[in-house]
Length: 224
Image 1 (cartoon, rainbow, N blue to C red):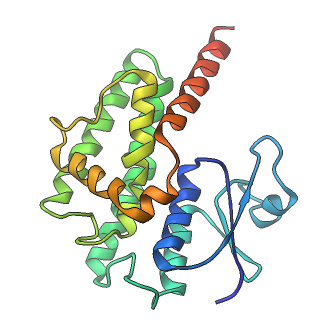
Image 2: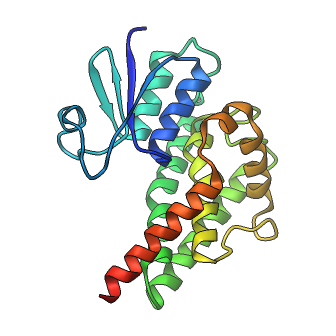
Image 3: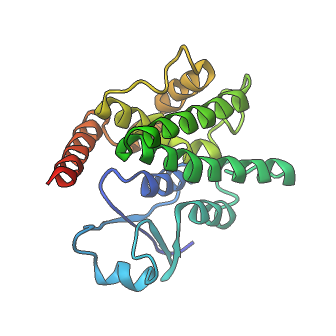
């Protein structure tokens, strides 16, 4: 199916989604590491509006934004293993809704938790709990959001499985616990135990150190 390249950054949750989807589909690709402070000419060329990763380049044609890329991968390599998105229109719509909920509502709430103060931080915590509760209920008795195998929502929710936990450890808060969200906690264990996931996601301890340094720098900048 031609040449495939992925532009990303070290331990980036969005490009890791793309890489995980390609691995699940059995698609070989070349990974190109980008520097946020010194973006390559290729990245600027392929994503001139946002100049951000991830960018998937397939036969010289760029596709941007991780959610859009995941759908492209599913459509392009539809005969490779199982589909990422459900076939039923309603289920597909719900999968897209959950992905948007994670990217917009949950990540927006966590930004308030990490960088907000006082009422803003409390609001971020409330919004985070609201989304996590919804996702916990959505799992019902399923092994994965996609059913018996990893699908579209599971890949998007990899942020919750790994990065979310690293963030809450870095800021010293317990937002997602087994007691509060048993189904979501069980899903995290199942997801992280999958061989392809374990082989392709970054080390949690490294993420914690990165986030601690990032939050410390932000605090120092705010107080200077």
